[in-house]
Structure formats: C-alpha cells, structure tokens
Length: 311
Figure: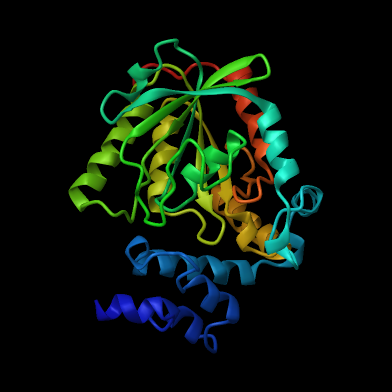
C-alpha cells in the first residue's frame, strides 16, 4: 500500500512523535527503514513504528540509568557493532559453542502435539518470539554452526518456521531438548495460518510437562511488544521461567546496546515483571553471548522445577 511504501522509506506516520520534537534523528531514521537483506514482505508499518519508538526511548535514557555491569559485560564479550565489525572473526567463539555441545539430533516436528515428540521426557528449553527476531539463527549458533547454515532453516522472509521443531542436545553431561517455535507477528503465511501458529505455541506452553524455561527472543532494535507480554503472562500462569534474550546485538553500537538493555529492563519493571531475570544479550552472527546462554539453559535444566499442571 501507499502508506506501507511511504513508511519503508522512512517518512510515514511513525515519525509524528519525533517530528513534534524537531524531526527524526539519525537513529530513528536507521531503525525505521528496511535493513540490508530485509524483505519488504517481512516488515510492516507496525514493526517499523515499534523500532522507531524503541529508538526514541534509547535516546531518552540517561547515563545514570545504564547499568555499569551491563556495560562491562558488553565490553567483556565484545558485543555490539564496533568499528570494523564486519571483519570480526567468529571462528573461536564458534569453536567454543561446538565445545559446549557434544551432540545434537532432531526429534521431529509437530504443530499440534509438539510436547509428545519428547519421548525421552528430557527437560525442554523453548525459543520463542516475534517473526524475524532471530530464533532459527540463534538455534544454529547454539549448536556451533553458522547462523545461516545450521540445523534450522533460515530465510530472509519472516515467519518461515512452520512447525514446532525439537532438537536433543548434550551439553557436557546434561541432556536437554531445544524447542524452536514459529514466530508470531508478521509472517509470509496468511493471517489464519499465523493465528494457528500462535494457538499451537500457546498449547505447547500450556501442556508441556518438561518445559523449564522460555527464552523470549527480542530484537534489540525493537524492544518488547504486545505479543511478547501475552507470552510472558501465559508462562507465568504455569510458573515457567521466562528469560528475555536481546538478539541481533551486532546491529547496535555498544553504547546503544547498553541503552536498549536499560529500556527493556525498565519496561519489565513497569509491567511488574520484576521476577524475570535480567535480559541477556547475544549475536547469532558472531556467536557472542552464546556460551553464556548455554550456561543459563543448563542452569534451568538442573535447577528449575517442572511446570505446574494446568494453567
């Protein structure tokens, strides 16, 4: 539509809030336009508007609102888009990820009865989030494989994951199941199919007896959105841990990444979701943060109890 094309060019209604303060900043312009390799059928006005709002909130964050521990963590594992970022070598980080995972195998897929695919009744860690939040790329990075060429199919079009996929992984002496769910929000599928996917995710969270934690993947340039909150509340009803994971950390400078983290953390507190752990950050492309994510997954497998029945 005309509105959609106008917004993709960075001149749509999403800028009204910025214009009232003197016009869109360079950061807002960057957040509200299509990225390189991002397809026009994978992003809509709502996504671009949410990115712009998140950019505005990043700009409003004061220095004393940024957690110094987060700044130190970003520097320590070299997160963020630094000068010469495209020349970074991820081979060592990838080898470390491979070292963490000694075995990965597919357990199958299902849209309606995903929990039944876990025949061995191993503890489950689910990856969930909006379409185009980087779930499949992160799943590949977690197994020590290139983000775009691993066990999970990655496509430039959002909403390419059409079923709930289960993968058994061995981390040291710990066995667990990674669950890759379809993205919600913008997708290549019809509205009816997208709603069916959301119902399937809800059914899985409501019925799994082995789900220990949901890794809720949130694009660090977009922040938390309405369907994320719905998923958090659904997990809370069964007292399932929900860990926010800020993805695509290589798209922001270290400074903006720390500010994005502060925005999301404040957002969680505003919604009284303070019992959720502090967001973690990861770059699937360069595998920074993957080792820390595996440590969290193993912690939930060993410590977190099974979910409550019903809900």
